Image (cartoon, rainbow, N blue to C red):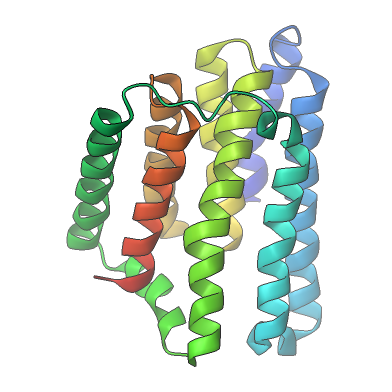
Length: 217
């Protein structure tokens, strides 16, 4: 229900701005949601899969693979060029650390949820670091801040759609109370994408934020 409510404005924007918000964008967003819903339904029907780490790892590979396939055109473009790399990376890292540690200070809910992953054996810890800190930032950024940015002409429409869709997919991973922080994260990443930092800046920011969240430094 929350997924539908969050995306009502997105569908409204599509029907109102078809010239700026093409079918490819809408269909790709729907496809991502459908895959998430199917995975959730599978887990509900077969509860044992929730504690099966091989299944969790497979699920963690499937979604990024889908995002990368949908964003394949972005991988062939110049979206990864970073102007003034040293200066901009320093700025991005500073903002990411400030937001990540600030979030940890003001609320422990999200951090505690993620850090529960660490109470596992070394192989599973390595898997989770790979999925959460490397694969997720890369795949999510090339889709939400690469593909959508490239396909939606209006920057304001892009920012709104990317924030809502990014928050929506995290409904399947986090308690509803934590979604406000995900929404703020999506907004920050969207603004970084619209600045001179480009996709590299978004990936670096997302990478640092996820490490802080996962390890509860």
